[in-house]
Length: 304
Image 1 (cartoon, helix red, strand yellow):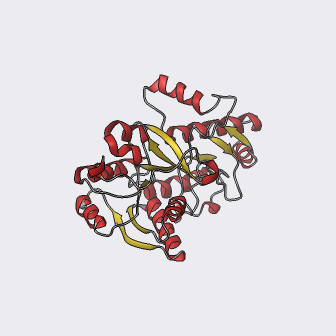
Image 2: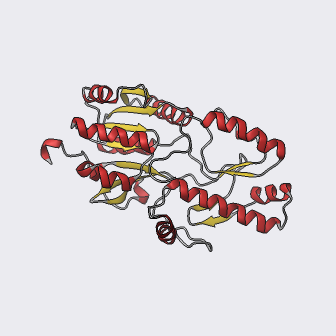
Image 3: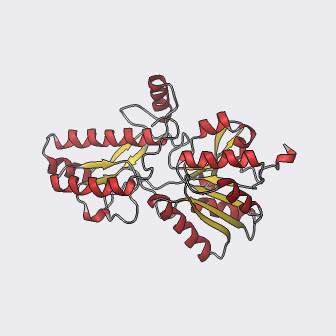
């Protein structure tokens, strides 16, 4: 999972539609580490459990944050065109409509066919207060690179999938103002008996693989711990006993709690926004979890 690799890519629908029926047919308990898109109804699958839950309100925190800063904000949305991010984009659009927030542009993009510089220049003419980029970390990073190349001024930039270390290393001054959405952050010092807390996991991972752990690695590790717990409590290799152990799991991991609801989705449902400030990831929203103040607006290129 090093760097900007994103498991979903463009094969998501094909893979899930093939894997889940096989898992169900063979009665093999599976702990899935990715979010299921809406076209898959997980209630139909007894043996698939989801360690990672992104609610329909993902990135709503970004909309709420800009509303705190500006009375009638103008927002532009750039959504990577695949099943997961389409769902996220449409949910944001529904929220803005319900709250009568002006969406200046909503664009579903494709890395291979979309003219990104042209699109960004188009957004520039809208005078948007917030630009939300919902896509995998590679797509988001490419967008940011183009913003730098074109020297476009946006007051606030929020991205859904963030490799903050890569941004800090490669994006220069702009890195200090980017806002990232995450469900896992070192401000949540959950602790377990396997590795300890976030900082312990970070040290182990970094010393082993020589790069900083992305969220994909962390949630996959948590899924393994969930399996370990289920096997130990089932005390058996019987598939149904292991499934029942997963149904009744109530486990704390360094990643957070693992406890599945009636739809077999993990109860963890937290979204943070952190802003990179002086090369540090500072939580700025929601207010009850904020570690520091949002830098807003981003200084214009001419003022840096």
